[in-house]
Length: 191
Image (cartoon, rainbow, N blue to C red; front, top):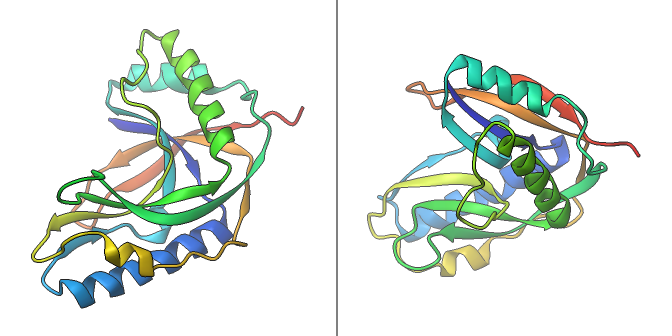
């Protein structure tokens, strides 16, 4: 089973991210009408804290167990910010939204999760953690050049929401996109 640990976005944050995603879609359609992107639907938007990939059912159960106790990070406000692409240079493969508020809390969550997963002999990620909300994956550039189109997208600054838990999800791939199923929800510490 494919699993990942993420922050499910509050409704106001999803609305802001969906608005920015629509603006990105319009900008790309204007600049490169033949470009093909796989757009993330609002119900699938999240901030991945750790992607574990394909694991045995027993490993997923062990991860759920290690994540069961509340995390030490207190609840926090999350807002999304300006759009960007991965990789930063060259042909874009992923379009995303940055995190404007809540960045330090997300980093603290990722660090605590990494420590817990080490108890299961799961090493830390070699790449630095870059919290973001993926909104699209580029399938075919077809004339999509540069990143100036990113600068024409605005995200509502006041559309924040409270994050009070993390979730272990199973991801099942389907022709219509991935289907996420909650396996474990872990609350953040209330103090």
